[in-house]
Image (tube, rainbow, N blue to C red; front, side, top):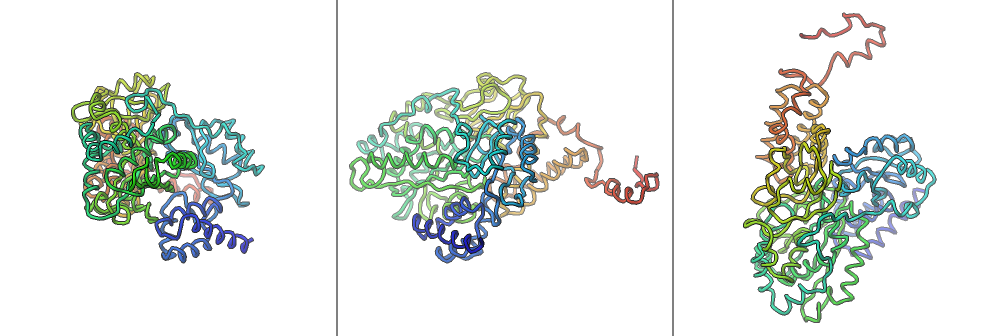
Amino acid sequence: MIVSTMSAATDLVAASLARLGPNPEYLLQHLIEVQRHFSCVPDTAVEALAAALDVTRTQVRAAIRFYAFLHESPRGAFDILLSDNITDRMLGNQRQLRLLCERLGVQPGVPRADGRVTVGLTSCTGMCDQAPALLVNGMTITRLDAARIDRIADLVEQGTPVERWPGDWFQVDDNIRRPGLLLSNPVTDAAALRTVLSKGADAALVELERAGLRGRGGAGFTTALKWKFCRDAAGDERFVVCNADEGEPGTFKDRVLLTSYADLVFEGMTLCARVVGARQGFVYLRGEYLYLRDHLEAVLARRRLDGLLGAGILGESGFDFDISIHLGAGAYICGEESALIESLEGKRGVTRKRPPFPVTSGYQGRPTVVNNVETFLAAARIVQWGGYWFRGEGTDKSAGSKILSVSGDCRHPGVYEYPFGTPVHQVLTDCGAEHTQAVQISGAAGATLAPAEFDRIIAFEDLPTAGSFMVFDQSRDLLDMVRNFAGFFAHESCGFCTPCRVGSALLRNLVEKVAAGQGSRHDLEELRHIGGVMRAASYCGLGHTAPNPILNTLEKFPQTWQRYLRSAEYTPSFDLDAALSEARGLTGRSDAGAHLEQET
């Protein structure tokens, strides 16, 4: 068996190398392929990849240990990961986890002895509008309930291949509840490309400037200016990258755009390539969206046949551009553009020091444009219909519309598109939210809003957002939300800098201490202090924003914390008297002398 596995791993690596080539930038893609076949990356594959790609074994193992979906030891023939965002928890994912583990006789995260199955948790899978959800061997199953969990256990025990599981389980709906400026028409006839060919790249930039388009990933940098910087940077090779690593908890709009608007997204990338002079583009697709890869490859293949990708696009000599899909492997930090580029190059996704910025030194050190899915779609429509069309909605500082991923305590979760300037209370009304206690906007790293703030507007000048909009009604304990987010950030910290690596773990531990009823006001002050240090001293945006849900709720919802406090003074989280209970049981003592004296 060992010899067979070694031979199979070597053969698989050879096939992957033949398909993708021996470039070290493709290391992560090779590792993902090996992981899918063996539920781990065997030592034989590590050796073969190190030799073929001319990298060290240490570099290969470092990549495996960095990404959550890669493993050095087998996970089982069925690797099941339940989505663990707070919205999944609100819908009962913990109960479903216990049920599935009981049925299969496993402990969470521990492979079963017979190698059949592993059951565990993963971060948000981008299915909050049809949660609870899980991944089985990387494929998405939505709308879990007790009956479906029970049937999954049966199929695992029977060894039924995932390809033969009920097809409707894998259905992922768009759930577009309110289309607007961008979502009203998914059809494209290459109008943006024909326009840039007839009027020129400079004219396209003028329309983007006139539109006032800013990046829709959250940072809001002016799109036309970014493209200009890349075009004007020194060097004879440029790249265009679509950031589809939609990892912010509660965000799923890009999933919908890639499903039903992929042509427009690819058209926006191709338009960008024409403007900046790039010949190669990449879509960095988050590992949780593996199920979308075949669909996206089919759209790309059709566009090549239609003369919209490849050499001589639309018959224009020298207009050569193509797009490749690169999968991520479960690392939230790769949503940051420089970490994404590191991952695209096959490395660990650790953020780069800036400057230089990607527009001058990005992929392989060449000028690179990185925009998110929604931005490329918007760019295609703007060049097609004009900047004034886009400027017709929004505010003076925030032109156009914003697509929101709405989930949580509402009757109609899904995707909503609004003009910038729309107040929060309008979204709550439209999605059927009632008795709302709080809104978490822009994901775990965003802002927690109290009811007094529901008149605030969604706009760069007030509430900028990458798209997540999570609703919590009066029945929810907001500390559950904070615990979930604190655990998420502690897990997702890349570990590069001390303020984030240590600070996120300290925040998580202190939050858990308070939730366990062992906290004091001193601990709340420590949370504020550590959060302040992280905001000031962390290397990248993850560390800067990780304390947000803690600091926001301490300020706006103090009662959430106060009711858990044990005393006003310092309280140790370790209960020494409780730890002696086993010794008392062994000696048969329960008298007062067998207990530590409690201070009153």
